[in-house]
Amino acid sequence: MRTYRRSIWTNSCLSLLLSSALGLMIMLLFLVLSALIIYFFLGDMKFSRYFSLSALITGGYTGSFFCGKYRRRRGIAEGALCGLIMYASIAVCGAAVTGSFIGIKKLLLLAVSGAAGGAVGVNSKRPKNLRE
Image (cartoon, rainbow, N blue to C red; front, side, top):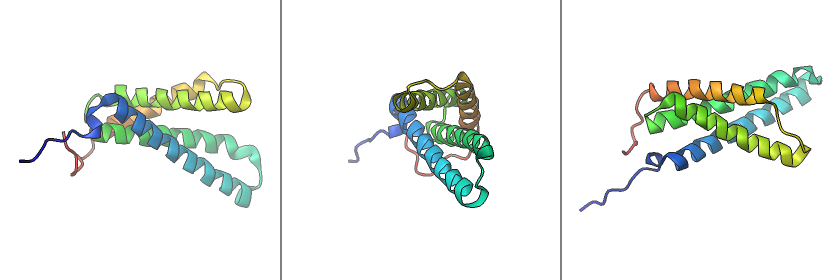
């Protein structure tokens, strides 16, 4: 007889932390890639603001997209919450390094991009290997 094993996505706290960590890793990867582009090709720091904002949007969207795709419920709310968790972790790391907190605009940017990613993730095609 087969035992029933619950998916990691049924636990809301664990799935939010996992998808936020995935979004932060993608954000870090995008930041490293943009730093290499700025260093090797542009040589000027005037576009660094736009690269960092696009990294925030990309990380918030993809982390919340995976949360919405595998949780399959409350996409906008959990996506915004995922963005809030990403903001909190960035704020703590920023306060540890620089001694000051980051602005509230980044929270709004991560919450909006997270809500959009969660909504798109819930409405996307159901994954084949998803267990309820």
